[in-house]
Amino acid sequence: MSRGKAVMVLGTTSGAGKSWLATALCRWYARQGLKVAPFKAQNMSNNARVVPGLPGPSLLRTGAVPRGDAAGLGSGPAPSYGLMGEIGSAQYFQALAARRVPEVRMNPVLLKPEADTRSQVVVLGEVDAALSRLPWRERSALLRPRARAALFELMSENDVVVIEGAGSPAEINLAPSDYVNLGTARDSRAACLLVTDIDRGGAFAHLYGTHQLMPEDVRAQVRGFVLNRFRGDAGLLSPGPELLQRLTGVPTIATLPMWRGHGLPEEDGVYDDSATGHGGGGLHIAIVAYPRLSNLDEFQPLRQLPGVRLSWAREPRDLAGADWIILPGSKATAADLAWLRAQKLDAAINSHRGRVLGICGGLQMLGEALIDTHGVDGNAPGLGLLPLVTAFEPEKLLQNTALGFDAALDAPWAALAGVQAQGYEIRHGRTQPHPGLPAPRVALRNAAGEAIGWQAGRVLGVYAHGLFEQPAVLQALFGQSGRSLDSVFDGLADFVDLHFQPGSLASLIR
Image (cartoon, rainbow, N blue to C red):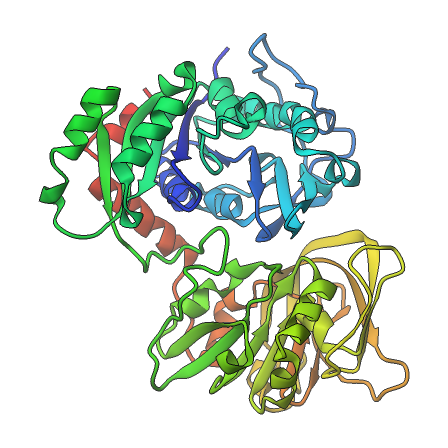
């Protein structure tokens, strides 16, 4: 029984470069004429995308392997897709790089942090409240069969599955229940790469220590080391790689130069937490960086626009001189709104004379009130900049949709009037005009004609994510359309083709 090959990107730490390297490999193998799919057994991120989900009766929901031999692999039709689900943004972009339609099997488990010790668990695209309440080790035992079944499905349908690990495979305290790194490496029999961030220092120690702490069987699957984000004279690396190979038997097959402008969003965090663009002149956009902000990947196109300076605001002085303020999405709207008030950012936002844009959770904050009768998010008074009221519902709304801006928007958002675009919605909130206040102008509607955006003068709030990824929106607001994702993926593939040892990527799937 045939199955595809697997290439797995492991890292010595979080942030070593696994996500972007896996994305580059997806495009590189796809350009060889192969059918490629990405996979990450479990991702932890509040950056998520809406994708086709599994049909109701799918056996993958139960954790049973639908078909196959003793290894769990088999043949047969791929599942049909029905309802929408959500996966981590990294796997969404990896699927596009592989020239595939993103879908829930590519990231069967997504953890969306709601607090330091609590996460919402999304399994095959859908929230599982019961699993969300379980301790980590008990939960992992139940999640592994579902992730394993999705992996086997993808391997039976593709020539190559590019797998991204999570964190480090050398967390010896978690090794018995680590199905994301160790379990997936074993199940897929993947050829593994181990990548480290040399810019942080200690790269050879990270590689050696990680390699030695891995279980012997998985250690044997490591086919090459990758030094990422290298700056300086490559001649100074010797004899480090040679000595490391003597100690481990593993060659260093790539030294990747530092490349900040590759164009792919970072998987987690507020990117590199530094402002982009130049300090003087141009348009300054400040994004409020509350603790549980989400869907940050949608701002990547703004980082690449000439004449635009993007910065992150955590206190009032960070908003000084900003032309725009953006309140992004939030995984915990009421809690982030309380944080915003504690930082005294509410007064700074209310007194700001430039444009204010709220997206999803940011839209909800701009309204008059948050009402939560189901214990979904929390109750709170809003900032009062839009005459809206948001009620939280237990059911999460997930959809990709066509979007249309109203034909007669007011300044300063008039340039968006009549613009057609695409976007996606991920929300528990349902927002309506406040019945006791003058209604705001409806600014945006989805494909069903539902109002999902409102304007009151300088303030605009929308539920649609992904607007800045739309050339028509960028052209209307900034007079330029930005760089296409496809060109970003091709650039990544060109980069690894140039810097990996000749023939090494092809050898991983032989």
